[in-house]
Image (cartoon, rainbow, N blue to C red):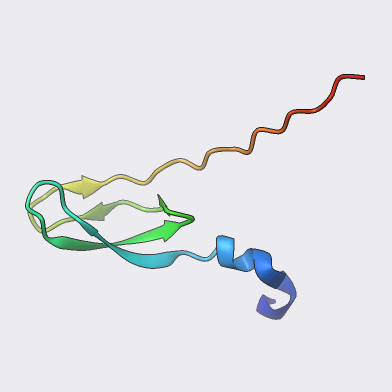
Length: 64
C-alpha cells in the first residue's frame, strides 16, 4: 500500500532520467534509483547503459 510506505518509498521508486550517450551524444532515457541505473538501456547507436549493482550499506558495529 503506497500510503503506508512513508517517506522511504521515494528511495525505492525508479525515476525516468535522461543521460547523454558517450558515443554519439544523444539523450537516452534510463530508469534510476538514487542515481543508480536499475535496468539496461540501449541508445540508437548501439551503446548500452548497463544496470549498476546496488551497494550494500556498510555498518560498523562496536565489538563487545
